[in-house]
Length: 300
Image 1 (spheres, one colour):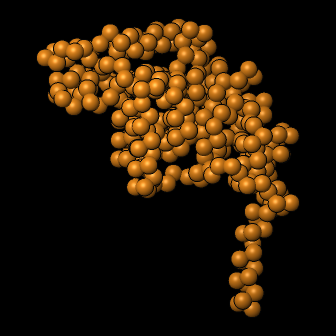
Image 2 (cartoon, helix red, strand yellow):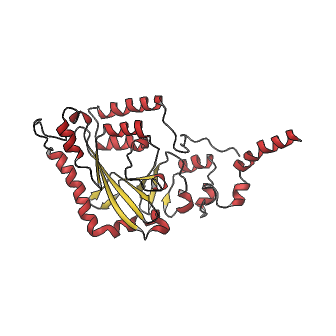
Image 3 (cartoon, rainbow, N blue to C red):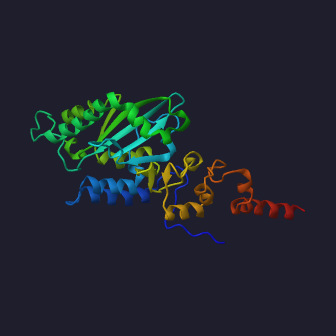
């Protein structure tokens, strides 16, 4: 039976972005930021679709855990991050929480002689401080909500990092004092970025797509399937993550045996199959053998 063609192409691995791709993405991104109707949610939706733009500082040895970014991860009923992602080493985890503010909000007051942060910018910094204060007393609760993603390393230490995305470069370019004042905010657990720096970072450092999760009633839900899921389905079961029929079809078209995963078999063999037998019986394996058999016949 011929497998359905997915409606979108999955990016298989970190690949360099072409100049054409960057130029087209930049045009769309700046058009969005400069639009009079833009707001935080519109920007977040764009970043979720073009997830290579989502900044991921403080990477540990294993990169972004499962290649996943969580959308609207809540610390508490009144405290909700716009994005969150995990990264790990052998001994510890980092959970980075990200706040997106309106792109047109001012960073500084109108006084250009003295670099003074605006009330709106101070309020955004205060939001980060409220997260820190909450986590001092409730880190175990947050860790428990992430337990399915942490897996067998859930007992390792969890540290918290924070990112604030706010404002535009145009406020900084006119004054070295402002640049210095803005830069002084960056420390061991806080990174403050402008919206312009997201596209600049992609141009200079590169970036990979990430899949987007959201919190569901049961556990997590795969909101956007932007790239190959790596070992995600080798560790998470249908009880841990909800996947739509469209996403299932797209993954099946790439030879992920999702029908077996849905029936309770983790895809622990080559990240696509539940066992070696399933791999050897797959169309993918048969297609690998064809050129080898043809080459062998030609030699004979």
